[in-house]
Image (cartoon, rainbow, N blue to C red):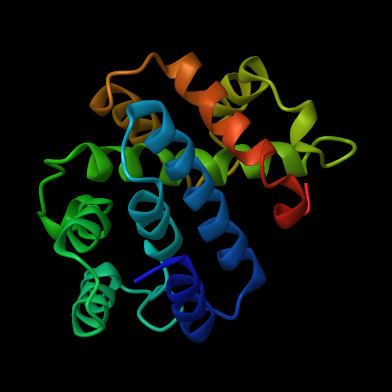
Length: 183
């Protein structure tokens, strides 16, 4: 399996452009952290790219991500990727017992939140997003209310990185693909 295979699978199951952009954002953050931690960038990137690929077809818990994991198994994706994807949803009960699984959980909600912050900026530009603006928006419970602030904080704790540094890392990762995200 390689990135092209994963991208084809994502596009086969996901038609919503915003969900595809979210997958690309999480992939970028996973690659950023794989580089930081000295891990396999392609494997980590595929976990990020595919973490929600089944969401349009199976949006209800626990179907998502359980059904997606079954599809990935049939297609020969490694258990490490499948377990990381299962672990990004607390309700599956699958423990996040690898650095990849913990990191996927840590970046998922935060990437979506950072994109939301960028979209309310006057120029809708990720370059304008700063850690302090993300933290300020985190305090505003009406802003992007579907995003769990507790999961963002818990994710940073699980990968043992200060929240400010974690936010900055994810901003940096998203800057790398700003054109793909339309930001």
